[in-house]
Image (cartoon, rainbow, N blue to C red; front, side):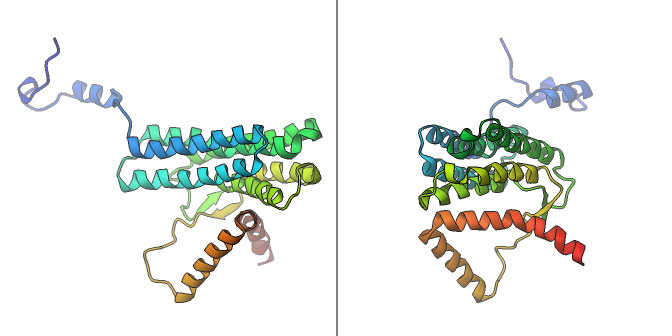
Length: 257
């Protein structure tokens, strides 16, 4: 029958080196509930996007991608606020991101516009999917070694937002996937390649939202929220497409200087 370890069971000088090593190597049981619930919700939203696209509900599929983005942004912040970061949570988050921002956008784009193109269509979707996988793998290996102000390559949530935003905007405007199949055959793989590029994108992690700002900044923020409320598909697609182009424009600006 197991007996609980007490102070009298330990050596007089404390825990011996062998016991300490064994304790360190023994994996901790259980996981933190709160941040992993948000990660699971983000994964569910990405999975639902795939199901919705298979049923022809492309607006719902695109909206689900954006919901997954919001949930993905919350899980890490909640983990830091509650001090519940863990290696398990980091790995789980990467796997969920691969589904929500890698597989789901590729399958939605393929189902909506790329399928009639045959091999060209599925190759374009595959380039995006493998780009997301490589982007996430590189990001995990570069944690702590790169400038926090910038991402190397287009972040996978932003890439997913470009694809989903364009599909959402087109569907809202009555444009079918067949009408823009050639454009999507170019947009989808280019977005995938931007994820594995060395183009620098601002992370906005250094943005101080607690400090004071000019009053006009608040007015601009309110205006953006109003525009999103009026035309969410068009505004979100435009914002993320502009973000994707901004990194490329930065390269040309540096060369001109």
